[in-house]
Amino acid sequence: MNIVILSRSPALYSTQSIYKAATMRGHFVQIIDHMYCDLSIDKGAFKVFYNGYELRSIHAVIPRIGATATDYGSYVVRHFEQMGVYSVLKAESLLKARDKFTSLQILAKNNIPIPDTATTNFTEDLDGFIDMFADHPLIIKLLNSTHGEGVIKSESPKVSITLLEAFLKLKHKILIQEYIKESSGTDIRAFVVGDKVVAAMERIAQNGEFRSNLHRGAVSKIVNLTNEEISIAKKSARVLGLQVAGVDILRSDRGPLVIEVNASPGLEGIETTTNINIARSIISLVERNSKYKL
Ligand SMILES: Nc1ncnc2c1ncn2[C@@H]1O[C@H](COP(=O)(O)OP(=O)(O)O)[C@@H](O)[C@H]1O
Ligand SMILES: [Mg+2]
Image (cartoon, rainbow, N blue to C red; front, side):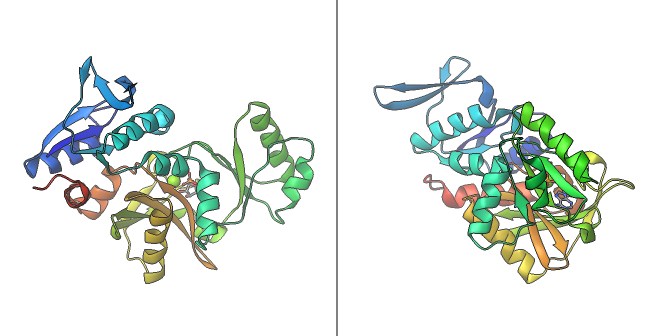
């Protein structure tokens, strides 16, 4: 099969891992930087060009689209979809998952438990907005951030209002969220491929830090998920239309709460923590779903 991995860097662990798993199965694999693809609609025909060459006879694409490339990346993915190429990640699902508020709306609409969450777009009555939440600390998040970089714990209403004013003046989209204190700097990453949770890990934040992202220095270990957590993780991926997803879950006093669903979840942390070859599962998914018959 002719497989394209859309990735900004061939050197990244995740890209390498998927590349190796695909070549081990005898596939021809190209790593293509989506930011350098030209897209044309030529008398109704969708064409993708890379370094001046038209990409033809591609059987499947595996997009690895980072947060800084969401918009253009989604154009590239949608183009491949229009060409009838199987894509592990659909453009519409990428866009839904990337916006934290949109994805929480979709999760909640489908009865998936999430922390209490709110958003606003104007600064005139931030007191009233903050009052929707009885308690501090509360969490303020930038909607398009990753790696814990835009996630803030605010200890007082005064600080919350000042931060919200600043972000809204800068035209940043934000949400506020109930702080789940009993999760105490620990979350669960459940990795979904197809209709299965193929691996899961617990991430424990560094001392003095509440964010349990590995990029923020958290440590990780293997965790056994409850049946409820497994079914919530699978359903979260399904309602967002994701076939590969990293579902982040907080263990709260009222049960598991989903905080976000990652559309291009990294493989390094989860593969090295669990010793599970997730890239291999992704290639099996491609083999099952592509129209190309082996
Ligand atoms: N509502 C919350 N209560 C407690 N901790 C939270 C909450 N939301 C996020 N966190 C912590 O912050 C981390 C990053 O938040 P997340 O929403 O996953 O954003 P990012 O996309 O930056 O990873 C989470 O892994 C978790 O440890
Ligand atoms: Mg996260």
